[in-house]
Length: 280
Length: 191
Image 1 (tube, helix red, strand yellow):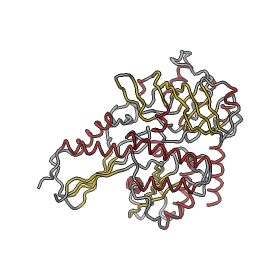
Image 2 (tube, one colour):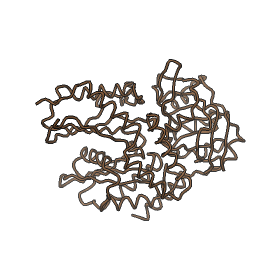
Image 3 (cartoon, helix red, strand yellow):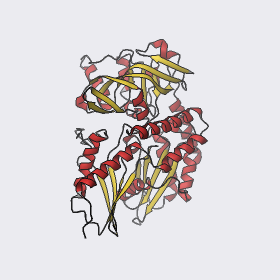
Image 4 (cartoon, chains in turn purple, brown):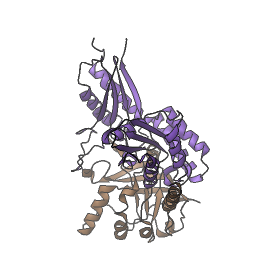
């Protein structure tokens, strides 16, 4: 059974998905910012949260990117083992990125890491960055999560000793204090604990996709409350709104290891998904 | 306090500003980020003349998203970029040129002293790029496009550009540094 989808319509869908991701935030993120604005007592911070909400209205209305840093193109794909596209999915996603770059438009952000030469179309070696996960079924779910550099640059990873689980919270807080206003708070803080060096970072990034309105448990709540007592506030100018949420994902790791990654996300927690195939 | 300023800015315009004040700017601003700063300094060392004037200027830490149309360049999205990356290059730049204001986000480390000669740091809400684009009325010129769209120097005409918050004033008061210090103390308490 081949899945009924043409290459052209797939490319169109991914380009449309990118437009949606760049111009409007998921409802749970907007609601979290609204809630923060209502609760914030610091005048400067309140002023800025209002500017963010106004900016979101303009971006959605005129369908323009909410931030000039339209990010580097990151995709999370869950592909059903019975999904048969009949064409090269990676090449098609790449083509959709190139199309979206001129169409939306997106800022060309992909450069060679050493020569710093800009490819001009948001593609390059390893970009778009596509994380594939094989799942049961006959569907393909693609989530676009373009990531800006302001928050990405302030992220951190440390290999702890196995007996240092008690230091995780402090590591996160230190990371947030060092970052200050630079990653554009209010933040979503994604934490990956366990796995390996690279798996921890991926877990941290994946956890940013979790809904912000789901309750925070245990370590998530503990870190969330501690972060918001730091007083960094919206854009590092003070106030109680430093983080909108903290999300933790764990994976089993080597008995001699304890990798911990903190992936910082600015207020513009951009992500959206599209599903192909199924039982039609 | 709230101020509405016009470019080119004079020393008197900015000496009255206090950290925490709100400012709107009309006139001309120039974008510059990492690569442009490096080139400005490099040309200064070689005693070469810049293709634009920085006297009384407002530098905007911004890598805008632009679109080329039949009638020239159109601003699509143009919010501030992280100023911290330009912290080291800013004191020598201010020494060589009478830049009166820097617009950015996130604050800058160890520039308060260099600003005391008559410059301010103005914070624009990070990511508010669609809002900013609405306030940019014209792309007057572009220099150094060879650096790429985000790194080029864009000369923009703006109207009531803001709200900008005075983050560091000419007296050396730095809101970001104060917040950082408090956060550090709070962190030590938690340890």
